[in-house]
Amino acid sequence: MPRLFEEDLSPLDIARRAGSPSAFGGVRLMQLGDGLERGIRLLEFRTGTGLRFTVLVDRAMDICEVDYKGCSIGWHGPSGVRHPGLHDHDSEGGFSWGRSFSGFLVTCGLDHILGPEEVPADNYNYPGIRTNRHGLHGRISTIPARLCGYGERWEGQRCILWAEAQVRQATTFGEQLTLHRRIEVDLGGNEIRLTDRVVNTGFLPTPHMFFYHVNIGAPLLAEGARYLAPITDVVWSAHEARYRAQNVGYQTAPGPMDGFAEQVWQHETAADTAGEVPVALVNDRLALGLEVTTRKDQLPCLYEWQHFQAGAYAFGIEPSTHHVLGDLAARERGEMIWLQGQEDRRYDTTFAILDGAAAIAASEARIRAIARQPQDDYPAPSGRFRPLTGRGPK
Image (tube, rainbow, N blue to C red; front, top):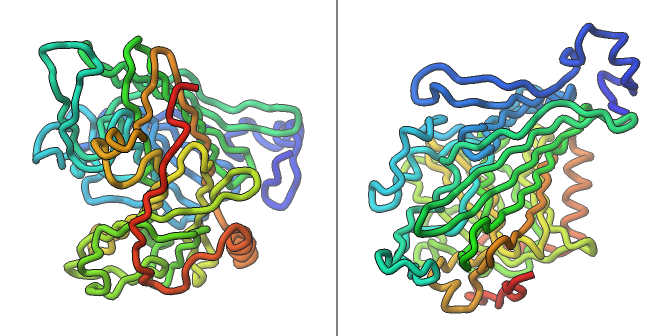
């Protein structure tokens, strides 16, 4: 049963204590009303433990704000929460995505991730379109969802706060992909559970690429914050030519810096016996952290994004279906996921708040038991992009 305010409370206990369960927590639908965010629907979740987060229904059901006991965990980017109707996907050489980039979870895909690229479109069998031009990180994050339901549900002595929606990315002469998303958290809990299923609802073979841009900001992100991950190899860095120039390695964050150029890494990670890969960002001074857990068989690659520029200070945990090499490389290496008609792929992720030094220590011990990450802040990238297998139809 939920543990709330130092008590274990049954459904009857909660009913007796308030005229509405919303006194303890719940889910409610709201609409933003001003500026660039005007008209966006969002769901607010409150678990009663101090965890509060919002879900942008009209921005692919992505998670926007995440707060714990008044402390912001999710990143608030300079673009703010921009209405999807204002987004121009094809401008700025494919980099206009940055004008709608803010929030804790930004989903990337469904048929393209990473930088702008032009790729063959032969699979769609339409003579008028020979190639597709993709912008940064794909289209999905600025598509409104169709909300299927939300609320609170008791299962015995357990109360689950939940929401479900579908996000449709489709065109007549191209992809027909649908993201089915479910978000859950327990009343009295500190762990957000995300379940995604991407379906090719058409009948032509369609490329599928997917990753989560999990963005953490101040005050959880601060000088001295530590990145914990079961890293077995540092595969690649975008900044190898200037590897030490900014004096920022992969595992310890600096404070906000002027003139900082973003750094991106790809790490090879090990999984535990259940096939899970936990990683975390922890702030020892605040005794607070965030642990992100994915499955190695679903999201085998892991990027780390460092954007420590003053005024846009952010750290990103980015589990991915593909290497950082990109769309064309995935095709050439035989690693593109080709979804056949009506085929799907599933992704299971949890986001857990680490409250207190003991919780941080337990997470660190769990991660170290899987693999000990390099202690050198500047491990030389190996360039070993391991083959990604199991990409055929299931």
